[in-house]
Amino acid sequence: MKFGTKAIHAGIEPDPSTGAIMTPIYQTSTYVQASPGDHKGYEYSRTQNPTRDALQKNIAALENGKHGLCFASGLTAIDAVIKLFQPGDEIIAANDLYGGTYRLFTKIFAKYGLKFHFIGMEDIAGIEKYINDNTKLIWLETPTNPMMNIIDIQGAAAIAKKHDLLLAVDNTFSTPYLQTPLDLGADIVMHSVTKYLAGHSDVVMGALVVKDDQLAEDLAFIQNSSGGTPGPQDSFLVLRGIKTLHLRMQRHCENGKAIAEFLANHPKVDKVYWPGLPTHPNHDIAKTQMQDFGGMISFTLKGNDKAEAFKVMESFQYFSLAESLGGVESLVNHPASMTHASIPYEDRQKIGLTDSLIRLSVGIEDVEDLISDLNQAIGS
Ligand SMILES: *Cc1c(COP(=O)(O)O)cnc(C)c1O
Image (cartoon, rainbow, N blue to C red; front, side, top):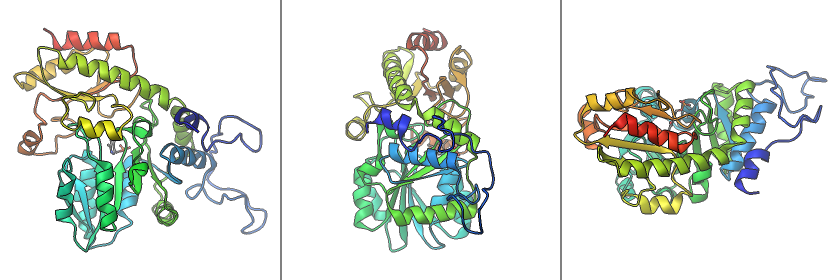
């Protein structure tokens, strides 16, 4: 089955009681048993729910995995992965991570005796220096946020295999339409389903996908024991959203390309960060591991003036100033004061996250309107 067919059909059966083509919202907490222990595979909705089951199978198929697990948020999915480990275990994470992931690692799990090393992974050879007998996991996301660096998943997987570690990839920015980390040797794929998979800015949800049966069992045990599961209504909304994932992604990529090229040629724009530009420092790796380059773009203004950047962001007609990304509507964000404000000023400068850096989540509107909006907002 190819990608678009999977998006629509994988994991989805006509409802056994009525033939309904859309998986119903099984809004129930429990299931009646004929006699104690004699049930139809469903006992309690934290553990199993038919609407969530269909979604989990669908996402697993899209990632070319075997087992999918959905959670109440992307962060709950990450939380479940880290609960596989014990005090004293060490985790090597990329240093350009979603801020909430960094907060979960440093403010919550560090208290329980887990040790995290945050390192630049654009040169994956650097990872090996941090591996010791306690190391259990490598955690990365690519493209990174908001600098749009690309990390070599296959290279990281080779290091993980060599040292018997797990490799987890946060695939939120790419989606399985652009890259399938399990095919590149990763053990766990994680999603903030909130973003492109749901796609309509109306749900918060997370997911994990794995191939290994034992790993799936361990994660399902944590999913059920900790209980951060999504409800059936949200599962239904995401099933519906995913049916158009391939069409939406195609348009996000087309619009992303046109806008990245427009910005790269604009006299007031300094740097453009989009992995599809041949001038992007990791463009070659991006070309080998991604099918296309997505709709996330960051750029800076010449002169690097914060007030100027604010003026641009306040002047948009179609780009809404908001956190989050991956929805059908275009969004703009100021990382230095919004999503990445908790990173110290000096550290932000070092990675290029300057005060005039503007991040776009390019939506699926008509690109001519988006470009004319950028043109009037940036000015001449
Ligand atoms: C949003 C996001 C998360 C967190 O997911 P939530 O659904 O908000 O909990 C994790 N990683 C990335 C890359 C994200 O963009």
